[in-house]
Image (tube, rainbow over all chains, first blue to last red; front, side, top):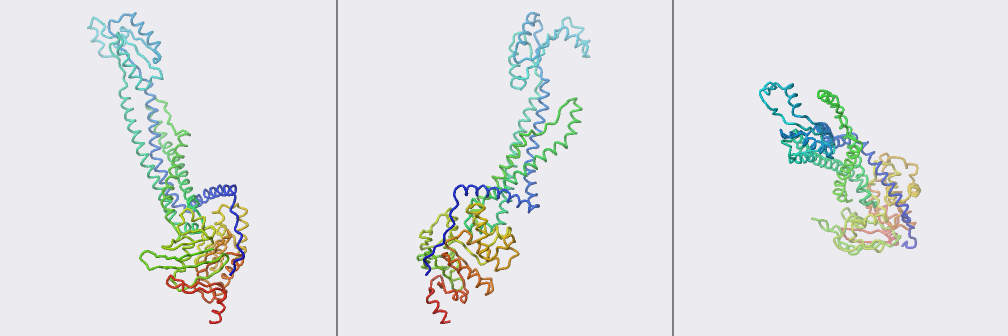
Amino acid sequence: MAKAKQPQPLARPDVITRLRAYGRDHLRGLVFSLGKLYRQPFATTLTLLMVAVALALPACLYVLLNNLQAVTHKWEDAGQITLFLKINTNEDAIKKLRSRFEDHPKIETVEYVPADEALKEFRARSEFGQLLKGLQDNPLPPTLILTPAASAKDTNSLNQLVNDFRSFSNVEYVQLDMQWLQRLQAITDIVRRAISIIGAMLAISVLLVVGNSIRLDIENRREEIEVTKLIGATDRFIRRPFLYGGMWYGLLGGIIALLLVLIVLLVIKRPTQNLVGLYNSNFQLIFPSFRQSIVLVTSSIGLGLFGSWLAVSRHITKIEPT
Amino acid sequence: MIELQNITKRYPENRDALSHLNLTLEPGEMAFLTGPSGAGKSTLLKLIAAIERPTRGQIFINRKNITRIPKRKIPALRRHMGIVFQDHHLLYDRNVFDNVSLPLQIAGYAQADINRRARAALDKVALLDKEHVMPITLSGGEKQRVGIARAVVNKPAILLADEPTGNLDPDLSAEIMQLFAEFNQVGVTVLIASHDLDLITRLGKRIVRLRDGKCVDTQDSNNNQYYEIMN
């Protein structure tokens, strides 16, 4: 019986070599998985479009909402607080009040409309001007028109200011004609939440789409997986190209989604300009910023990786050579 | 090198594929496993490669008990074995060189070593000129030689083969068996399942006969000659 000779086994590679091999395997997985996608153009295109549309929909809604908010923000600029003073307020008290508002940190400008001027204006502008002739006294109060500072233009601070001014002794009535803006803001809050929910649901659908593609890919390569397991491959080694496959779906799908968003914006650009032209506004459509684009693409990559990880962790350990 | 102690393997809803089987292969030994189909030849090889686990009994590889080896340690075990299959099990989406070098890639060798070792293995099976060819274009015998090159590329201590000549004509079969004998010459422990009795008796190695999951007869190379005379 041949007992004497024992084959000299190959020395196990040292740590540095194994680390370099590890990097090499990663690079190979990256390129190999991209090649796989390229070699199945139809299936790949289908998956990428599903991913892209699912991401582009909430992204578009988000961008449009941002635009809507930019428009309403401009309208808020017009927000002024009108203070009707008590009819018999004397000039001294008015002067005091004016200087008080001029020093107020949250008030930008103060405009004073004396009662007689208000009456003149009313006569000039209103058909009811004739009616006033029958009155002995001027029924109109002196008025202060305040423009809030930019830092106090949100509804909360405006309401705060209005409440403060109401308690002033010579002030009869404070008017803030912004209720419709507040309602609009409430609606946009609802829409924002709806977009978050839609986005979350579509993110799940991206997970499922990528997970399913990777699962099919694993099924198609079942024999290859069995063979590599038989020659000593670890699950991690086998998993790698599939995870990279998911990453590619995410990256490419995210880029296509971004392009779709840009196309949508370009399509509505002209009609929007027509519309804002009718309102004499110089509003410009806001495109997604570089940062927002990066966020879109990286979250798409994350979803792709996670989706493939779900498929891989479920299916690869189950495939064993028989 | 390989030791099976009182091994029983029972598949669900089946009679025992192997029952109370004992078999020991010394380091550097070469043996054939033979018997009618269904005798348990493939099952025995699968137990050694930890593809299946025994229902009862103990298995030792290189004095290590692998009977209940945890799943995560199986890759390391298989890196010390070369396995050759009847239907080659080559990967058809890559060329011959990439097929042969795969075990080295998996084990994490440096690219230069991989190139050197893979070419040496291909040279050994006389297929160095086909390294860039896709496996689909190869003949049956060539595919089997690629499979053997892949099995020996990381210089395993153990070489297992399940009907490696099952689909080959007699001349090619002899050539393949000769190749296994050459690996055995340099000290590799070789266990080959084959029903080609004519061929394996000619090689003059130990023959282990299985029937109904039992070892019915084992001959070593000495009384093999006697067997040859008797036939």
